[in-house]
Image (cartoon, rainbow, N blue to C red; front, side, top):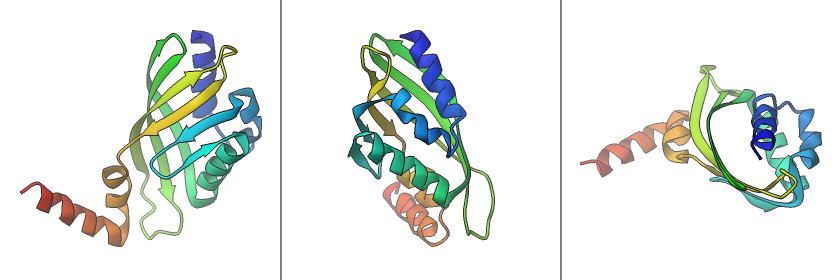
Length: 142
């Protein structure tokens, strides 16, 4: 399985809009995907999520920072770098997260669950919503 995990990590680090068409090489037909905004099943639905990423963000890319493999289960930690499209600030943004994968016997992904803090990692970076989120966080910490 470690060879399959290496191929998956490289695939995500080198992901492009064109390589989304190759998802069947990495996901089973009925693969499950969940992140803070989506919960879908099947390659076409997963491809839509990644296509949307390229339609709404500039320069999105993943950097895998760690791997833990135990049998068919894989934990990848990663940094996701991007720039907001159509925002005044064009600063490079980073979201830090983790992915829990369950692999099929052939090494393809049958379950993909992303974990990351949408409030801290995304909402706080948005112009109007960010101010409100930071205020709420401060209030909750008192």
